[in-house]
Amino acid sequence: MRSLSILGSTGSIGCNTLNVVRLHPDKFNIFALSSYTNTDLLLDQAIEFRPSVIVTKDEISAKKIYELIKNTYIPEILYGISGYRAIASADEATDIVAAISGSAGLIPTMDAITHGKRILLANKEAMVMAGPLMIDLCSKFNAKLIPVDSEHNAIFQIIHTNSDNNAINKIILTASGGPFRDFSKDQLLNVTVEEALNHPNWVMGKKITIDSATMMNKGLEVIEAAYLFDIPIAKIDVLIHPQSIIHSFVEFHDGSLISQLGYPDMRIPISYALGFPDRIKSGIEGIRLEEAKDLTFERPDNNLFPCLDLAYQAFSLGMASTIILNAVNEVAVEAFLKKIIPFTEIPNLIDSALQSWAPRNPSSIEDILDIDSEIRTKAMSLISKS
Image 1 (cartoon, rainbow, N blue to C red):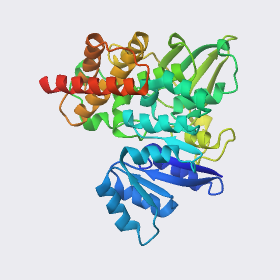
Image 2 (cartoon, rainbow, N blue to C red):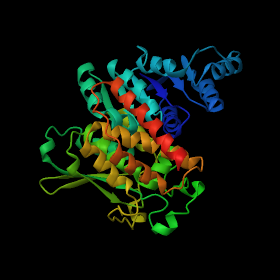
Image 3 (cartoon, rainbow, N blue to C red):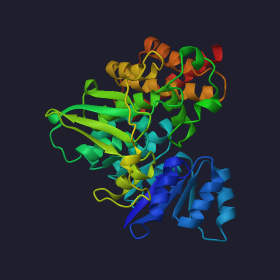
């Protein structure tokens, strides 16, 4: 039986992981659950799954959970970054579900790697910030990264037994195009937060939903794919596929094009990652191909959604620039969600930062965190002056 620590159990990935776990009580034990702000849901999850450890945002929320749960059972209750790090590296946990959104998930994920864990990676930002370092440490500490994002999971399913990357001609990531794929530039000027959060296919957290609307999510995925699969970024392409049925392609040099299909439901890639190398039930039925008649593809409009090009540009400039890309994007998305800046200002801020700021390339996790902190401060200053 595998024992799971779920970093971010109340988010979309965390909840869907528990949905799959419910189907397989004989295969998985929940060692630890964690959340940041959704204490009520965390409490409900803890009462159902009885984890040994619960981690929450701060001491106040930890005390709240203790008072509410003490008459049911008494787990160890931790809080803050030390708590997240503890459950990522605990001897009792065999698998770590890395589902904390954004850069906040980097340090616990690194802890899981240095403790040789099997990591179900749903935090692309960690890979964007520290991909080369993470890959090197996985080799050093015998850790295993299994991607959970539907696109990377699809690629992993296709090539994880392929020992020769030279046989790969191209990787094609598919993208829904988000809610504004048919908008004009003028229409984008006036989109609201509520419109941007209304994704046509997927139910996700706020940050990733906005990233999908700007196409930055696909840009981050391009960078993640380059690191995860050791593929030159020039061999990674993107196509808009509005139906979200085909979750990426791998084109081999013999002309074969292989894809993975599935309904747009995260339980499918999560179940694959949980069960790997076996396949386990996800709770989702297979596609009725006779009903999926209109599967379409088109090139992304990089003039309308420049974030995708900015990601390629940042990767070509080096690791410091991918840290800049991620940090400014997170700050800008938060500002948009708070209605401080318009939607179209997100790529403008990122572009300005990439053109203006050029910190040294990092050689350690400390360097990465220093650059990230410095860039966030600069980005917030830019927004306050706008």
